Image (cartoon, rainbow, N blue to C red; front, side, top):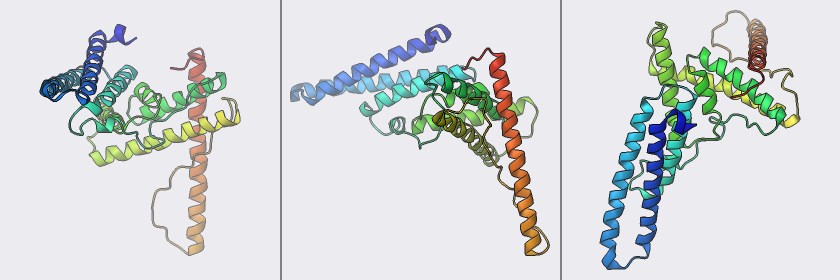
Length: 273
């Protein structure tokens, strides 16, 4: 797939992998080499590190030209895997975070292991796609970001930067007002909370063997802060009423998103990604 869609990037990935392997061999040789050969080995290691840095820089430049979408995310994941492999053999700490896993739950979707979980994943992915697009983020890319298992800290940070860029570009295309970085991050945080709820529900259904057409989960929305006048009893009653209304609205919205996801899945002939 990569060789067909992005031949230059695929070739660069192969070269980077070969260079890393050569550097690993040199590193292993240097541990048991006699003193008179140490200088030569160190020189070759330095050259290999420079070459690896150059290849990663070239890969990052090529990646910048790939349009937003699932393919770009898959390339990001492959490059991150190479950087994780190279990290132990490089000086400094610039690649270390490619070896460290992100916190649990971050960018973790649902795995399709059988027919039931495949159907659940297809419906959940469609709902996630719709949520992302509602937040002006690329839907296909978002689903792919949640489809590769827990990423490294560095890759998760790259995902976050990509989401902010996608949102910024989408808003610019439709003429929306420019927003502050804080407002953007707040919106993306809410997006991830909604996405996490969708996948938690799908995981729950998969564990209990519930069919994909079953009732979607209750997802109450957070209340907006405000000041109410009147007695404590009145305020408590109003808060309870607003909470009940918010819960009902949240349930109806998520239920509709789940139904839309099922409908779109059926229209595509039951295919997932």
